[in-house]
Amino acid sequence: MAQTVFIDGAAGTTGLEIADRLSARPEFELVILDDARRKDDAARAEALNDADFVILCLPDEAAKAAVAMIRNDTTRVIDASSAHRTAPGWAYGFPELVGHETIAGARFVSNPGCYPTGFLSLVAPLVRAGLLPADWPYVCHAVSGYSGGGKALIARFEEEGDIAFRAYGLAMGHKHLPEMKAHSGITHDPVFAPAVVPAHRGMLVEVPLHLAMMDKAGSADTLRAALADFYAGSPVVSVLDEEPGELLLRSAMEPSDALTLRVFGAADGSQARMAAMLDNLGKGASGAAVQNLNIMAGLDETAALRL
Image (cartoon, rainbow, N blue to C red; front, side, top):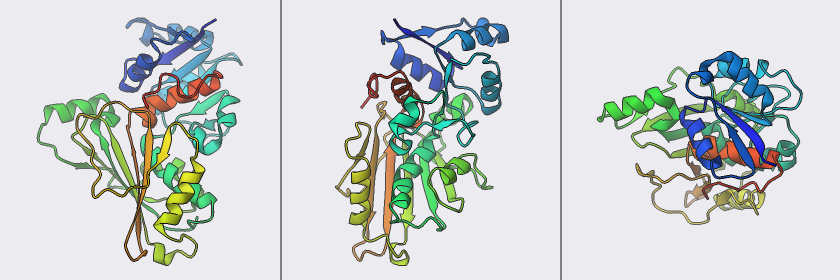
C-alpha cells in the first residue's frame, strides 16, 4: 500500500522539484491541495495530520507553525527550511554524516542547507578524524545559482540580465552559520562569504587551509584519502583524485542529486583548497529531501534520485 506524502509549500521551487521526483513513484501517493485549499489553514491542517509523511517547503516561521498544527504522534516530517536544523528532537538530515540509522528511526528530520551541505561534507569528517583542528578560524567561500534565493531572486536575475556576480551576507551572521558550526564540531563560526552567479542551479563551496600551520593535517593527499575513506560506498557522495586546472559551473547545468568533493594542494604542501560541487536544488534541497524520505520509508536511498 502506498504511503501518503503531503508537500506543504508545493508551489515553490523546492516543492516542485520534490513532487517531480516522486510523481512516478508507486510507493508514494502525493496529497495535493488545489490553489484555494493550499492557502486554507483548515485544509492544510487536515493534510498535515492525515499524511504518513509531510515535507515542509516553507519559510522558517511558517514551517514552525505547520509543525505546531500536527496533533497526532504518527505523521513524520521532513523540514526543508532552516527552522529546525539545530533544534532538539530533530535529526539532521545528512545521512552520510549522522548515519542512515538515525534518519531511518527519526520522526522529525531537518534538511541541511545547501551551503552547509558543501561545507560540512568537507570539514566535519576531517575534524572528527583529528586531522583538522576544531579550534580554528575557518573560512568558507561559496557561489550558487540564483534558484537558491527563491522566486524573488529568480525573477531579479532573469529580469536584470547584466548581473554577473552578487555577493551578499556582508553583515555576517548568515542564518546557515549555526548548523555549519554545530554539525562540523568546530568551536568558532566560520567566516562565510556566499555569492550568487547568473546560473539557474549549481553550487561550488570552498574551504581554504593553511596546512603548514596545522599540526595534524598532513598533506592534501592525506585529507583526500581520509574523505575517500569516510564516504567509501556512498552512492551519492564521491571524492575525486584528479586535480583539474579549473572548476566550472555551467549556466545550463542538468539537475543532479550527487555531491562531488576534491582537495587541491600546493606543490610545497603548505596550503590546500577543499572544494565541494553540488546542485543547490539537488543534494542541497529537493534531492536531499527525497533521499531522507526514502530512508525513513525503508526504501533504497537512491530511488528517484538523479545521480
